[in-house]
Image 1 (spheres, rainbow, N blue to C red):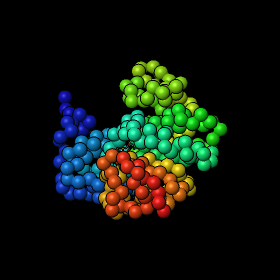
Image 2: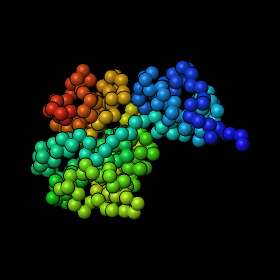
Image 3: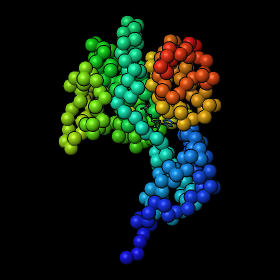
Image 4: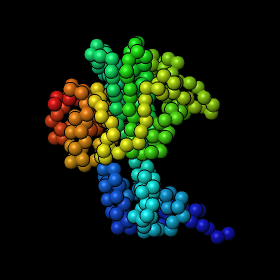
Length: 279
Ligand SMILES: C[S@@+](CC[C@H](N)C(=O)[O-])C[C@H]1O[C@@H](n2cnc3c(N)ncnc32)[C@H](O)[C@@H]1O
């Protein structure tokens, strides 16, 4: 039996330095994500699957598709393939505890409007953790104008997030006190987020480097484990825009390995990668 491209093993197609450099430049231009030389094998593996799906025999042919007429659609798929989407419910749980104990009580005294943005929400665990925190902390939530915006550049992640369905084992970190009636058992070991949690969140695909259609202002922004892939000038511009779209004194939560040191002077560090807008 003759083998086809569909059957070919993943190590078979040459991936030249020129291919990697051209693709890394395209990814950076489109998303801000920097792909250093250590990412070469990872990118090869992820994009080799795209070549297979398109029945292409070389990266030169793939680059021609990306550059050609109709390449925009494949560029979206390429970005979906290269993003790192690692996430989890109540990841870095001290952020949710800070929000519940320190922030929500004072915000709820200030008025009934509450806007939170999960920027780089991946498959949705972060915004649903925010929704469960709100539902478990604010007894008068139904009477409030509270909304969570959840965005990601990866369109496939946004679609997954919007379904609100997860394998039951992924829900293990959800604190007992916040589960209430919000985790609905479904067939095949799945759990679906309940309607009250879903109703709080709007999911959208959005490139953080492009124009933002929303006006805000936001009381709280979670942008965690996203800018780690961006260079410093890109981070500077982004945090400046976050400061602009936050209310005075608004809060920004970033990932545990990220920092605003020498990136933005518009925030005060409150500790544990929690920041408050100064100006
Ligand atoms: C590692 S995940 C972090 C998910 C979640 N915030 C958390 O901390 O668990 C990073 C996410 O950032 C998204 N991302 C990367 N570049 C982006 C960009 N330019 N605009 C919007 N989202 C981006 C990726 O698609 C990915 O889903």
